[in-house]
Amino acid sequence: MLHTIAIEPARWTPKRVTRTLAELLPAIAQTGFRELEIFEPHLALAPDPEALPQALASAGLSAAVLSSYLELTPDRLPDAGFETAVALLQERVRTFGFRAVRLFAPKPGKDGTFDGLLKPALARLRTLADSLPHIGWWLETHDHTLADDPPALVRFVEECARPNVGLLFQPTRFDQPDAFAQMQLEAPFVRHLHIQNRQADLSFAPIDLGVVDWVELLRLLPEPVSFSIEFVPSGITPAESFDLDRTLAECHAAEAFVADQFGVR
Image 1 (cartoon, helix red, strand yellow):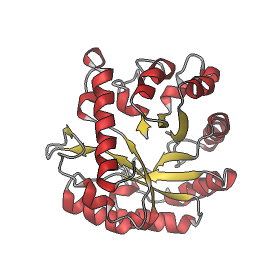
Image 2 (cartoon, one colour; image 1 turned 60 degrees about the horizontal axis):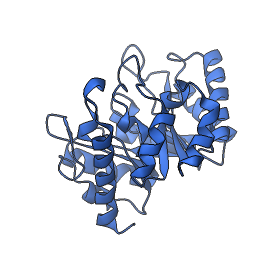
Image 3 (cartoon, one colour; image 1 turned 90 degrees about the vertical axis):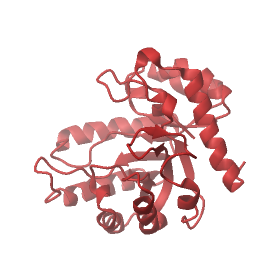
């Protein structure tokens, strides 16, 4: 899949979105991608979100994964706000036909610890999984969350005890030994991958040239899983110098590398 965050240069700025998703769809379709993981602001900030399902269909694209920013812990999102956000998320799932939702693993509290936060986060995750049991709920192994402690994250998923809850893997540390150890532990729970690569200084690199050997990592999975191309080097630029065609070409090359390595075309 193409993760639409990969072609959004404003992703980490207050603006979040520079071009509407509807504008981007024809160019995405020309690359050969057919399924998308959608960066939630591409929906939340769309000027005409009701028209997007038809726009996706017209471009021959489908919305497979919603990359959501819903918070699992009450200190970051109180219960009333959580209920409102869940209702909106559920409506988006129904409208677009998402098969899975990406969530961040629980984040530490203001004191930097998880004390007292994991129990309510677990209750919220179970509520979500039970509310839409036909879709996957995947916790991304992002740094600065519980994912920084892989055994603790695995225990959290095991305690959740829902068959539609799993992990969305990316390295929490871009270091081959650490990434390998993380995958060894988490592989039985991995349902999707965010494939990106970095240099030793954490600058972005082509999938096949960075510090993480993705071919070696993927061989640790007990069975193949889906993946999204999340970031490529040309996409990490200011909005004024962003080149959509070049970035899409790098995304396509990254997908082709993994597909060719594992014969999944």
